[in-house]
Length: 491
Image 1 (spheres, rainbow, N blue to C red):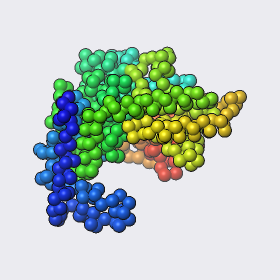
Image 2: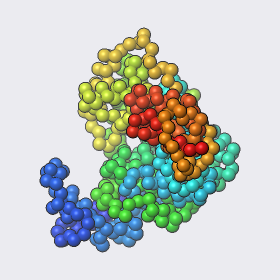
Image 3: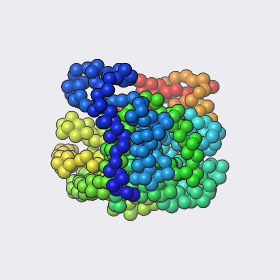
């Protein structure tokens, strides 16, 4: 990778040049470089941002048919990440997951999918008409964390389903736990499968030797990354990277024209151009600091009675040893020994200490340490956790959540997700849905892993789990606005 070349930001430079030319605009957007924007909005964010809120113009190229500066910016991204082709995404990794499936699968194709897939993957299956064949990652019963798929389980699933021509993985998962891609991908290729990876939480992995290998480094055929989640992209800004050996790049390009808006945000695309430049030229230095801060915070948290922060040393355990690696910039903090749920600790941190975490579940809170964090931020988090732990210390009292298991996700599927989604449907009370066929993607969000998939039979266990999560304060997506009714196939 040529670092001097990676200092270039062709799209951003063209946008600034056009803004500074002060041309008269008779095109969209209607605010005309901010002149029509609400005064309150302009006062808060300043005027310059509106001057680069542009539309498809000769000077700044077209996302759907790039020939100029967007083409150059995407080519620089491909070189930085080691891809044959890289694409800018303006509606997050969701659109990228859908595009990968649509480009790799024909209607009726069977796709081997790790069950920790995001709900956007299910939406891609519904759009494509492909049929999922699920297999599940193991669960660490002690920490109540769904891990990632193992090589042995993946090999067994591939061998048991030779009809599947595509393997879809999620790595890292939300907790930073990686699948063993360096063993899984070569075996999948040996068996003739195309490997797709939702790498939403891994746009930084390529740029530091202390982090797990990236999907492309492991040989994946396509991956999609949420540049906005971990590094310097703005919200909704993601990238899709592809290798040409097993991927029809023409088909992928065409698919992306269907799943992305024809009015893409140039501000989001500029943030991708700049985030790529920043990682390619300063990534090791910036990530050095983030890794150091995360390690220091992890060590301090693990000295607080009642708290446990997952680290690489845990990966030496029976199940964890089968994982690929751990992204140490993710701090998964187990809190249930305090007699509190992760939701409660998250709320206390927010309301009392003005600290907002990335995610909470019944047992944990999740903190993302990125290139934007400072030492004082981590110190403030640790001190707040120390106070909460001291206030709620109750070593003799068992946690009320100790017997709250994660659900079994191996529900019986009787029709494809597409068939269920487009079938005649009805909404019925959740309690009456047991034995019915779900027409909804039902997830506890975040992380958005489907508890129920369209076409699967609703089980008593799934209903009990959803109701318990609602009582604990989780957000359940896929039910009605009252969280008491669910869509099922009318039969």
